[in-house]
Length: 393
Length: 193
Image (cartoon, rainbow over all chains, first blue to last red; front, side, top):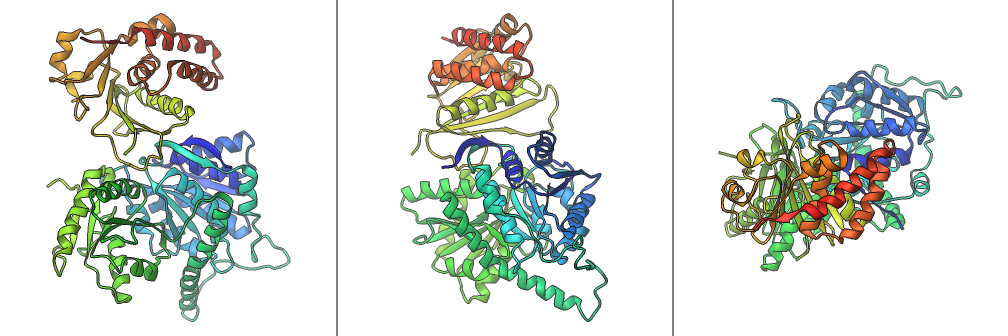
């Protein structure tokens, strides 16, 4: 069962794309996701896929080409990072509002400036309200698995939204690690063929896509997008259940690690969750009841589920790998605390901005957060909720 | 908690330290281990100092940070000994392996009193004798396998034969030279006393 391999995160993403064999891939290279279109174009050249590879001249064109392809009735994919995503910005919103289930591999990197090619989540956070489903991946395995599940979620008739699978630039994208791959045939069967209900090249049903949307309609269309995003939660779980039947690997909206009996917990995303698990185990050996909630699905944000899952804790720290520059904490911190408030849950919670621009995050630093939480649990109220981890002062 | 071995590589851009760390990951993977092999990317250019890492374990590896307290350090270019603190955090029950012709006295001064084991190999000599060119990564790979005992030497040699066949599919003439470099390096690496 499964194929034992060792691949980098980028190789894993490219392999998933090869097995999905989409109709169109349009991409422009940018560090640290460059290898994905590089490997994929090799698959095209070797005849291992029948994909039309469009070597565009910019990321704006990459997203535009994906939009054109999906609108025509094809299945389209792309990959990018940081400033590549910034250049797509205009078309990112067009893709989601046209309800085109494009799938993107986003290898997270700091958005310039100053220029930095290393990992943080500022690129993903910049488009968190653009109507794309955002799924985060701790490992190369998760980046692969999430891509295999992506089209079934995005193309579901109750969803019809574009989806991005995120992984940490360099930290997982360029690290060779063990992975269990699926057989090509199994992926093909799982992903299935794409038969959109409405598409431009259907001569039996002439339609227009993307015309002017005036005062009398745009509001309702935005409501429909929001409804689709709410519907996505259920579909993500259904697809995960089928995926588990095939692979034995269980996925949820988020992962709970030693959380049920925990007294203090960290909430974070992507590769830092693995480092945190190591620290949780070490603290548990010392009798400290530490736990972790790893967000997998960030958009739609599982607000009620997250709030309820954290409700029994004495103190919570939310780690944000993007500085929101708003004077009021990172995006994930704001989402988690807002969810708690709305659901009537009052657990002392603080936020840490960390790992900006590729700053390495060590087990010692994660341990220091749990030590802070032990102190925080002794007080009635969190003092200075807006904190930094690993910042030189 | 686990039997994880952590290795830090110091080299210069273009010498193949990154490739060597990936080949080591490959070789360990082929013996059934869980592995990580990753470089620390900086402003990459030929000749600039470069660090690469390996974790090797019999259970899944979850940690995703650089290595600060390695079991082994490999120095691919001995000119780095003057500018980089290569023994930083290196465990004293571990070892450092250096590509150099320097002797004990000179190394003692450069290694700032590191108390663990020190191994050297003249990878230039090995490489020139077997490949006719200076590619230190193949001899250094063999030497660290010998020093760290992360796998049986025979299995390693057999595995590398297969790897090279795959890696050099388009230039099979270099396979023999690389295999000789491995064999010679396994004999040439020595502990400095």
